[in-house]
Image 1 (cartoon, rainbow, N blue to C red):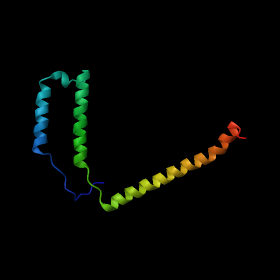
Image 2 (image 1 turned 30 degrees about the vertical axis):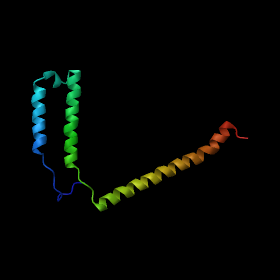
Image 3 (image 1 turned 135 degrees about the vertical axis):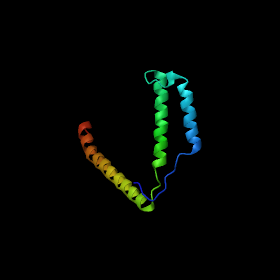
Image 4 (image 1 turned 90 degrees about the horizontal axis):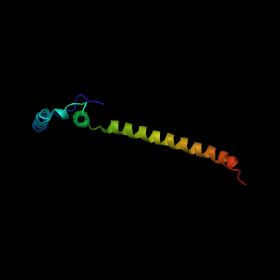
Length: 104
């Protein structure tokens, strides 16, 4: 959840310079920017993935104690529910398996 009071990181000059440098190198080789070319498809996919990942990392914030506790409790409840379901299924299918196999 986004907390309005938390500061956001801005793009650093080095990363902007790196993006401009990469863009100029890619424009000199048009097959790398063409998505119809298999190599260009992979290169453009990697570039889009990198830009999306960078955007995500800049947007993410560290959860506070209350939010962390809420997430931890939700995960613990989920583990308990899944464990109970697995135990119940195992408990029900042991006698059924013995009937099918013909336990003596």
